[in-house]
Image 1: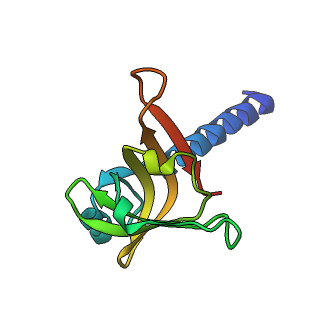
Image 2: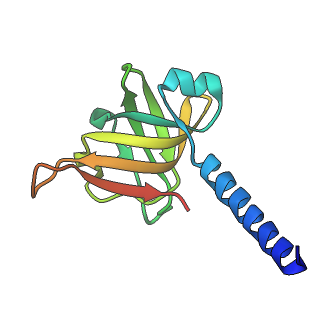
Length: 132
């Protein structure tokens, strides 16, 4: 084989490894607060906003800090801290999917996906907030 062919094969192999590595970082499992606490790994958490406990967000103080309480599918309630701006219609969300990890009793979210009621049709509307 020529050197050019070997270099081309090497570049393709490196590209495949980079793609696999980047995809592996995004793989997370769905968990409850209890499972997130025991694993210590990055997980996806599904739940509903506990509106009675309020939402802490002051864009003048820190536009990339938001804190609220979430009730998971097993009924457990914990504080969530998201280092991103507050999404539009946050309080109207029917369901919240968070990606992050538990640290003590607080779930530190890096990504949030909202399932909101649609005002136009029967399909669900999703709003995504991502910490950068």
